[in-house]
Length: 600
Image 1 (cartoon, rainbow, N blue to C red):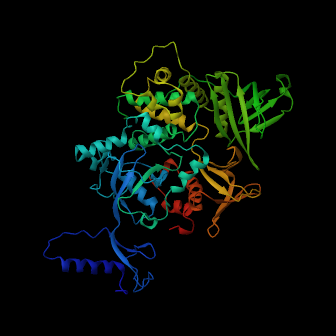
Image 2 (tube, rainbow, N blue to C red; image 1 turned 90 degrees about the vertical axis):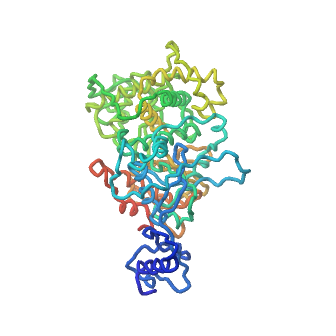
């Protein structure tokens, strides 16, 4: 019937089913079924529309199929779940449903990733275990009914309860031989290939070729984590920790040897600590410090292409949110050589405690891009104060702010954690922990177990007192402080004035243009200087306009430009979140910023 709404068409089909199967006494629930138009690859989800209004002709092939189908979902900690996911809604809403089922807040930070295409191999004897939770009721409403701190469904049987515990507790380390065989990107171009596999958030699973029981990865896509509260985020915190851990172990992000030993020590803590992660213990700083002004001799370096690092010493003063420097202390009463306002700048550590290297990397916004500056301090105490001042200034806060004291001590605590203590008693090595499983293959090759274990256990002395929750949070804090944290890479072409391909890095607050051959930063632009961006869908080109009449345009090589567009719009959407609207997700705004010509 082309004149009736498709809801009435459903009713006709259901009556036909009942007519042909009266004696079989089959009870069939059709409430989740809908029509799928194969030729147009679209769902018919508007019951008030007639088939004629939908543009359907007599030769159209329509399929009545369930909207929710089984899907194999690989979590960041490696656990594979078989659950029912919505194949008719946009992926953004499908992820919301999955996260509601698993009691993970802020689903907007996650998305679905296709697995890499694997070469045909011989059948493996040991297949991975899949935990079936397809019997879970489909989430309804905005509030998840909890029992014993977990969704009520998971308390119905010991098996289901065990599945939830596997999601909310860090999993045992894999053997080092297994880690060594896993794929590790060796360049930014390799890392760019991963980002080509993200699903389109504005289209459904079925529209993107997914079938029943296909495998997908659930991953944190946007590195902007809002309101992370261990009391309410047991699964979210654990899965985020696992994603960060594997990024370190598979060398997806660079870190120093000292940082690797610290990451390993925190992993030891999560294995040995038996206390449940019930609540967050906050550090309370009792010492009060006021520093309306800082002044001291520091060294400064401005990177230039094909030049060696050469620091020059000047007399520096820090007042309000600005740094000024002079030739000497005696000339500080005159005009400074330069004054730099750090409000809105990017601050990153460049530290090696063992090498007595205490540097501060500043990316200061300017009309033509970002001005990169390095400051070098003489010792930990000097570094802690100046680093704290820079961090506060970047947020528009002065040295008189009440948080200055806690910021200084937080930095000193971080430095103390990196400083090993050979004189302290070594912790008894747990035979169940293979220390080679706690570091990346690079250090597995560099050190024998007898050499590696003492180094990790010495670093463990500084984190042994942390609870399980605090250890996870500390791991994430150090991960987020790494220079390359949160950058997603794409190979792009046709930059103005450049014929060769380059790499574009997208972070939560900036875009980074990188030379592909030497992997050095060419230019950086911050979102807060962006006036507008748009996509020419015909030629697949992204164009962006910044303040100061700065315009850039590029085409995507390793991924569809929709993915790049979605990243930029997604990060701008993340910046609109606030605590007052903590439980409300503006799905319409997300699709306006990320949907492009397919926006719903």
